[in-house]
Image 1: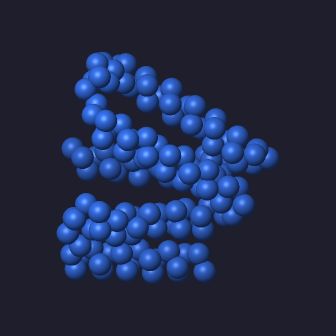
Image 2: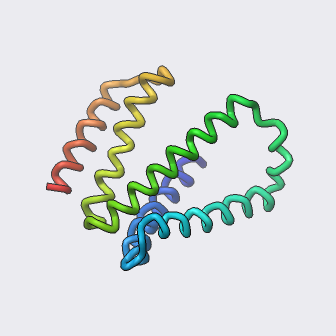
Length: 137
């Protein structure tokens, strides 16, 4: 089941890039990010209430709150940079560079989460890096 959600995530991320590139034309990138964020917040809280997940708020640990807030700050910084890059550059170049986050995530997961970095992971990282270079040069 996780694979279906992962594929849907990729499809929606691709749509996001194209829709954002069209929508950001003539709009300040920070304002565009704020508008997008409002839509995401409304949609996310809608899902929380639809699934009655709001009951779990009191059960969230202090550690989880800290890391969720830090994750939110990182997401905000990522979106601000992404929208500025998308406004200034071609989507066909910005998006592959943005997706280098896959390589960075694998490295950070190895260092901080002690996840395995296998030969397959290394080859994948090299291919993603090489593919990104080929696409943006």
